Length: 288
Image (cartoon, rainbow, N blue to C red; front, side, top):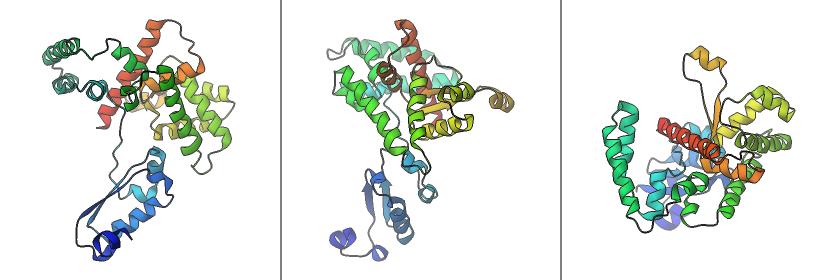
């Protein structure tokens, strides 16, 4: 109908190149089949499907063979500064990449000093901004809201939607595992970052170790958490348990605040959030 109304033609007869943009595609259960039909019928249409449910894209076999997938990661601090203060230091970002890949540190110091100088002279800049970003950032809503309690609530609501709506849509995902998923996320948020014993977690949840592994795998596909293997030989990686981190430090902070943070040492808690932030930045870097 769209092609008929706008171009007075049919799918197979289309002779113009057009873009087809479909937002929140997860609300149409047959979106991938529709995309397949269009893909197989015409080379003139470039399709972009977006979804707030990562699982909807991860678990779709029909789409997986035909699509180029692009993950939208949380905002890093440079992107946050651009959005909130219209300030960006691309040179610092590029020099950090050179530091990681080549060990070149001279330019990092130069551009870090430049950035500090710029922010000090920016009358709009809030000197608590880094602390606020670490606890509540990663999402565009921080640029517009200053009610941090409400921000945490919004993040927790987002997490609950993923678990209670997106994960439930997976075949054979039971109500019991929905509850277990929420408990695992809160368990991770209240622990020091480190190796996670799936055996101990299985005992805590009173379920099998295989079920815990399955839930963790699905949670990774939602992009709420990610895991890092031990560094070393393949044998060492197989034997040593993975470390799990949240996609942003703010997700961890929101769950921790919502569950009752058991870490009273502020410096220790800030260190845990900073470790999560650095891990997430490096993880996203490896994915690129």
